[in-house]
Length: 330
Image (cartoon, rainbow, N blue to C red):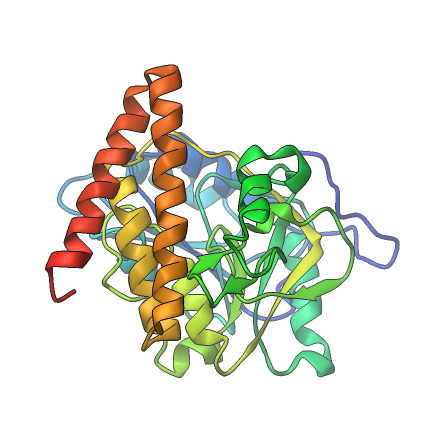
């Protein structure tokens, strides 16, 4: 990956950590992604002191564990390999518990960082004016899209489904996070409400306060990162650093089926909305369900037009999610 973060005032040589930095990465059936990630992390101008890999195959030695064993002695940082299932939220909690760093970076196994990613993030957190910043998220250079070129987002605006369109914010009126991909390239920092767990660095104090990922979010993660950030935001400011570049490869390995994703796209969103903004008013509930209805119609249209089995599976999951909310004490 090309170095898109170079700047004359930044060191071009590899250094020891400015602050002790731990990397926590959950993984499942992605040995080659982990191999590439460890190589990528070894190229950072500010090195982590340790990388904690939490493998979702808990009972037997995995191919990923074999990869790590072969690379361990050649890496410029310590590796802790833990077997623990339950899903990405629970795996991250396990990694956070054993992390020793002053800063804890949550990096997905299919993310590749620009060489100065950690240096940029640490520099932001070192600023005296940012003492109340709990976490900083990077900028994924390959995820940007323009609202005007997205039919889905144009309809969101045309129908007034959202009350705001600022990337990285949370719509407290309808319970929908505004996609960070809408943010065009920028320099410096900007305030956000939500931070992806793909490429974020948090102060240890945030976790020392007792905050962890909610274990409601099991298996494949949907919105647990937004929920965590929104709870952290009650005490801390959150920022995005436009100079800390990375790319997200969106590995297909270890993914859940579309039925489960469709289910969580209703249930998890409602859980976060109720927990963060509750008790919900009639207006908020109306806006939430209006948005969900539009999504169902949009996916149904796609299913009929393309006869796509994954769209049908998504709809089936969403119907199960609606039923779950309407018929349970959840």
